[in-house]
Length: 251
View 1 (cartoon, rainbow, N blue to C red):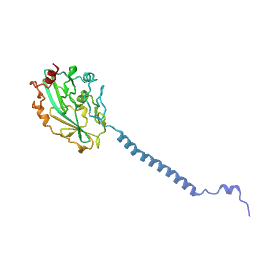
View 2: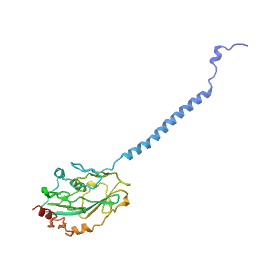
View 3: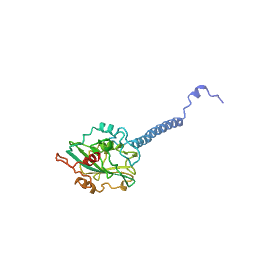
């Protein structure tokens, strides 16, 4: 039998199966690469969304409390914060309005500190203040001014932002909810308060606290009742000053 020559070996055809397998492996690698890119995109978006914070103003200043509450009136840095705010002075009040603030934690009403913005022993008076722990906010000054809820919390000495009240943090679900006159408030620190505003802040499930609490006390204060010896006006008409009682005690 004749022996095969080298020329016969070189002419031997390549098996077509090898080319098919190589092509299939390349196609599979491409499919896996595309699928891997596609699956990573949603997880990235989800992580970004979960780490996002609500937009809005966060107040700053010395002495702001970040405890879970209730919060006393902070006096140690009050003069510094008042200077930063640039609030108009009290005395000969021609602008005099009120708002009501209610803060709930897990359905329980927290007291709003008495004498926020007032320190009679040192003769400190701020045009944005409280007299008792009922949550009635008094705004009285020599001329109209756009007091914000953030201004009040800064005078009080409590941290406030779109998802923070003191040490209470988070927004929605079983965290913080903000309402004014029964409507959702999205940027609480920047909100300009108006006469008769009914502000409700709750920490916990949304259904655990009233969004529009009763305003009987607020109406009595507006009428000059409730033992606070003051009434409201948004014009040049003379109002009964809430500061008269405080000044009388100092004498």
